[in-house]
Length: 236
Length: 400
Image: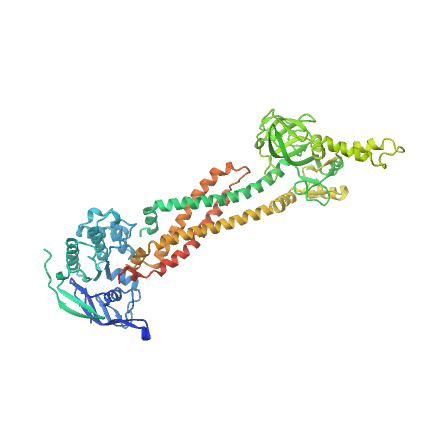
């Protein structure tokens, strides 16, 4: 079966062995279409971060199946030999804090990914500038991250996540440090970019301000997800 | 691909530059220590070069006039002059002592030479001021490192000498400047006792009935006269005729005069291999310790800097940066720190070397070897930090 976006079936993750084993994921099912932004909500210890790490190919699930874009990346074992390249080319990450590289300016923070993928510097910077323009931070292109506001930093982080045109973006509490206005602005940008670049976006959040903006929400509790329709409230 | 290490260094340049300066001063000390050793070797070679000799004739079974005490009769040179292949031969004495000028004194090697012209064995090679010793007594030519000036009066034992000439780079194997005086004065200076000691000695001799017997008139006077004369020199310096091999001339002197003869190569071996060997080992130990301290400092700094970037490294790994790119970044920073340190150290050593009281010779070859050592040390020192960086889990960038 081939699909775009994200498709997860029966994903399980067990930490430890024997009596001390903990089942963090007990059979997660999830589907996010290209251009769609879904919320992933759950209390602490519910398995959100574990799910994100499995999807981000930084920890190996115990069982199940995952598809990113058109590729089966996990089917009771990794199907992609180079997980590093997978993360670089197929997955965009947006973190709770922007985690920009402090010694690179805004343009190079964004251009670093295509450069790592072997693109020429000029082409990588050109692509970064286009995204920075789309995210309305092109005027800070030469600035260092420490000179940006929190909202600007988060927009640069989104540009970095998008620069290699990945089919999937994983956003881990991207609005946590922002006030309501800036938090909604970030979600609006993620929606715009998801539509523009046909990217499937999963937003892990506790943020009550942004929960009403999702059309679909996955609740996760005790390592299992269930889906419900969101309000899909307008940003205006 | 942009240079991550270069950008990081430029971003935190103050930290790198100040750390580099600290490291550089340490490297400067290391280069200076090597320079001190080179200076000692050069001083030893200068001593041999400046003596103008091809052969050194010394007391049998000694290591020559510089390494051991040596006494040769001062008429031995006449016999040596008659040997085949000998062009010139001259007596010489060496005595390291404090030479007084007014209220101050200077440690110097007092060289007793037969007054003569340039090119003769034992004579200073050239003068930078004044003239050579022309009188048989109480004139001196001094190395400018003594601080003496023309016309100064200096005291050696009981006698006052006038500085008539100044020379340069005439030093002993331990770097003490030379003071040349007439041979007769030098022989007297080596063995001359103070007046009280002479009176005491004469009284003891006169009290011995074997020397002061009425049946042997004149014996006591003859004995006293022989006790106040010094017929010895430390060595005879020999120049050989063109076309003769040093060993071919040396062998008959050894055989027929029953004296020790060293060629230039043998003397160099004694001076460098024996006289300054302990100092060289001492300096070698310092170099090893300084290298270890430098390595520890670089390792500590790079490790600390790396630990301060754990989150950035986790993000870099998460977004697909290869381990070798991260390792290379840390390696470049360590080497960069070493290069800054080396440049600072080389400049510092060049500036402070002339201030040292003894000769410090900074050779370009040593600088190149030092640079290679710094690079190797930095590479090794970065291993700890690279290990720490490679252990960083990309999952650390994701919360939870």
